[in-house]
Image (cartoon, rainbow, N blue to C red; front, side, top):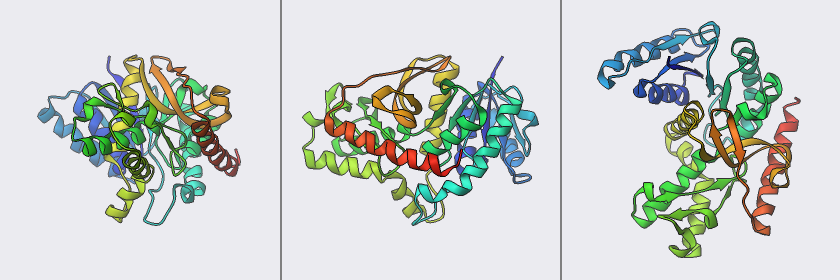
Length: 308
């Protein structure tokens, strides 16, 4: 029996996630959105691409959560997108209400599901999802570090003119300006990045990584990134549903790890059939730990503003 994944939000991120999933042909996908006709139309379009892909998965569009019942996993992309000049934090009030309503439906229709949160500001929306559903931390995980690390790996590959397959980049912390890229734990074919690039080059890559989302927003002018975020969420979904034991940097509800308590922060996490299966400890320098603490403080402030 195929696993059932619901994608909440049929905008650019959600529709792209549904497309990646549809192409694989190994999932049944439900695409949910409040706009009448939009999820149904995009689902039908994806179903008609099935013969091209050779994919047999069923894609369903809906404006309510009835068809989502019994989903194994949700990818939540619902919310307004960033516009030029708008920070992720500006989105907080509006998207808190949206994600709260989504969480209530998930809890009602699929109480045993895993949830991957993509909505921004991401770490705070993970908090809203966890508080409203009451799900354990193993089943509410934020897509943050996967995307940020992919961006960093992309920039390193361009700088060194090597395959992205050679690169294992690593970014911790909140998904935003306070993220914590870790060049010491970033390797190219097993070689530490500091052995291959001078500090000024690495600093430039780190800065571009932190501004990766804003760079895309500035270029698009009418929206935000969607291909890379949706692909990152799908990678996480596969790791969980296929029990891959894949170690990825994800936003996790920390309970003392890295000296942090009751806050969603990006850390290295093993994803498998239980969702979050292990948080991988790293030895951070005093400077790295201070940066992580600063990032956590920024997330805590947003969590408090949600009022949950």
